[in-house]
Length: 341
Image (cartoon, rainbow, N blue to C red):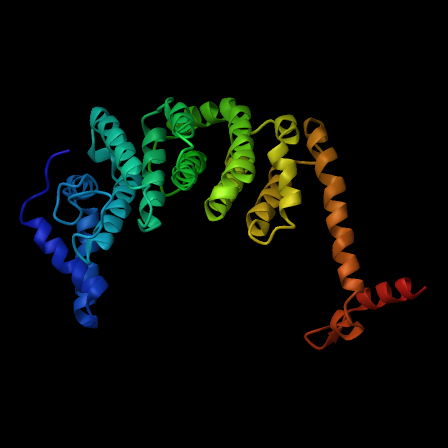
């Protein structure tokens, strides 16, 4: 990437300072308008790359953000800009430039996956890398993620953090492949979708191993890191179920998928586990004979959940069960009669 115009950096700093640290509403609106205009301009490719690469005063020693109070905002702006440009303006780059940008974005993601970095930075970089992977038909995406997951365990907290980011990238691949905001030819999407589908069984195994490592090795040294990694793994599983044609028999045989039902009992995992269960019900047709192994696993567990809900309902007071917004529920009244009988 070429260097951004020298005059642009101080102007950018002034507007970031006005928007995020200023108190004048009129000045903040002007700054917001300016920043949106910069994000859409052709010079923003080089600007975002320079900021993330430590070639500006904002963060000369990445991932250190102590250079200036505006530094975290500048890096966040750069990551958001990169994803914005990749999603809508990739036609401005040649094929070779897009491949070079993908490698640069991977390096930025590795740099900015450190601790105390605004959470939006690695998240937007994951989306940008995933979009570039789809647009360039990069079949090295999954091997790259797998290599990222095989780092040293000496610093467990750091290992949890870097692996969680790698899992976020893994989740972003199918999401970006089907994103309506991403301007890429249908043929590229279909090619990359086939690539993901063929690799889905291996992805399920990798996610299962990660959750096992988090619950055994990592939890003793870094409970919060283990929780973050486990949540990321279930979010990734939900994304792959949503967007990839995972063979139903493969999903049914996955210990991680079965574990989603057990995870419903854990408050920190309830939401992501619910997403996994709901997506599996949405994506797979119970009338399809190919889904029989999956339905055989899911149906009994859903019935158990329904029974638990009914039992909790029975434990409520009659008034709380029978009235909804001041109107008596006939079905609930009938249920009470059956229970009393």
